[in-house]
Image (cartoon, rainbow, N blue to C red):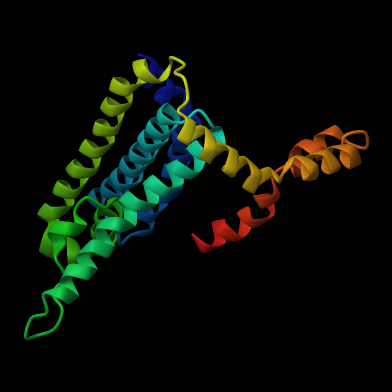
Length: 219
């Protein structure tokens, strides 16, 4: 109940935004050149990846108590599911070179939500491999439910506080120094900014925050 409730509460804004785009996309049917079946397939390839990304967020937030770590884990997990199968398919395509050149292995690309989008947005591909479209949609949908099931299973164990191990504490201390600086650096920043603007001090504590924009552009 907790996992499904969190999924429902976090999906409302995203779902409303996508549903609001549907009437605009439907204008293509009136203009011609797009059938109702094409429109329905595009709706599916928009809703299914949304469900997958939301399940990634629920799983990441279940496993992590830090909101920043959960956010980056969600982005990494979603990007890995979207592009990882394609990279794996490309790797094996060039590893098993045929006489006519590299042969793209569709089996590795099926778990990627982009694979279904690529087929739905290309009529020639739809006429050739339409069956793989529904298979890819089913695999993506199953992956989303698997993540929700894992989150439901591990949640009872994550809500209880457990004593931290010494090695974990040491790595946590190193990460804190890397992000916030040593004690002298933190004390100097606090003395300079806290009396001037407390919110500025809170926002400027993380030294790596200035690199977040570059990391986002690179990803």
